[in-house]
Length: 235
Image 1: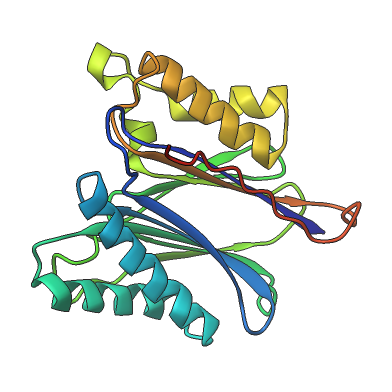
Image 2 (image 1 turned 45 degrees about the horizontal axis):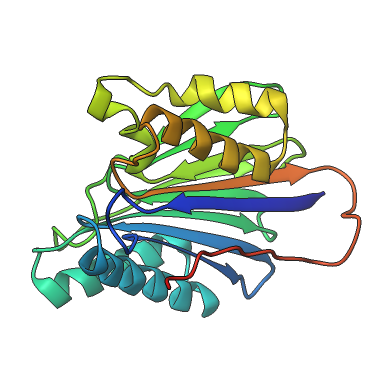
């Protein structure tokens, strides 16, 4: 098997800085973790929150701390920093080679869709509050066996809210399946979902939107490890 991962993200319309942050870290005993946080509100203040959360989680994961414990530590850090006055959602997708599993860790109003090799789609919803509001927040953690054809799609709430300004409900499962049938790759799915969400918002996103797609494929990769990042820079 080999792993293909893609991220597509865009700022809220009229806001210079996105409040979402995404990072990747290699796990000490093999595998990778992808961390996605959405800071409260939008703009620079939200970005400062999400960066703190992601840096805390990534740092702990690099030291071998378990995924659920890293989320609790990030909550403690954020709560101590602002005494329950700021918050962040969190999603961690980890490919753990030791247990041969995908670990999905969530806090707040996050959602992760998992598409199984047979085509079944499952929604994994967070059952815990956002980070930072309460002293004792425990994340929702799911373990899924790694197998070729497995797809996980995590996103911030900008995708859920797409079309809300014009009274249109954006059907995420329908869009996900339609894009996947057109081009079953992680990059095509991330870009395709973002494109459809922007169309629902008439090109003016109602919120920061980040989409993280993880695809487990069969066979060996065609070359060495690679990463491609494209980020617009301000003038």
